[in-house]
View (cartoon, rainbow, N blue to C red):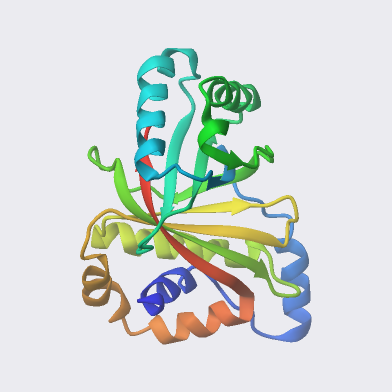
Amino acid sequence: MYRVFYLLFTVIFLSSCSSDEDNNQSSLSSLIMPNFSFKQDYFNCNLNQEYSLINIESFFSKVVDQSAEKLSKDLNLFLLFPNNDEVINSFIISITTRKNHESVLRLVEVLKNEGLEDLATCSFAIYQNNGIKLIDFNQTNNSLFLQEILRCRFNEEYNYGTFKIAIDRFSNQIKSLKIPYSSSYIQTKNNFDFLWINSFYEKNYTETLSKQWIILNDSDEIKDEFIANATCVDSNLYKAYKLI
């Protein structure tokens, strides 16, 4: 299963060719920056003793019903739960905004006032990392889906600019295949580290990817290009629920 995610991710990267020319290209590519369109924050939470997932679901349902009008219209709220864990004792609050720091503060305040800290211990450090949606699968009924988060780091002399063309090529191919999939690039405060986010909107996504994407002739070559460009530290898969 991990190979599916890995191959899907590796398609975005473009390796360089010869030494001197590559050095010049690397310098120029460092000037190319993503056209960031939103801010991303993740808050890691651990359930307090005697509370369960049912309590968390009930709490957030109440907050959304009672407080939605108080929150900014440009804010999206997601809950991420580890996939396939029999006992869930941790979760992630994912918030995206259109560069509106105040809306995140307001949501955190609402959650605290409504009693979230009685149910769980959360780290509410707001970093407002820059994000860009690379592939956006438009689907009206996508409140429940699977999301994979990969923590990655560019290899020496590589950066976002070195694989911009490959990102565009990848995006065009996926869109032409009409795979129910979306992806985002999140840049951390350290410009060498980033998150790559895969979102899958159907249960048999592995079969779909195997039949339509991984069988393409250049998949192995793309994997090699990825290895040259970046190293991913880990990959975690979550059940994602969109609340707002």
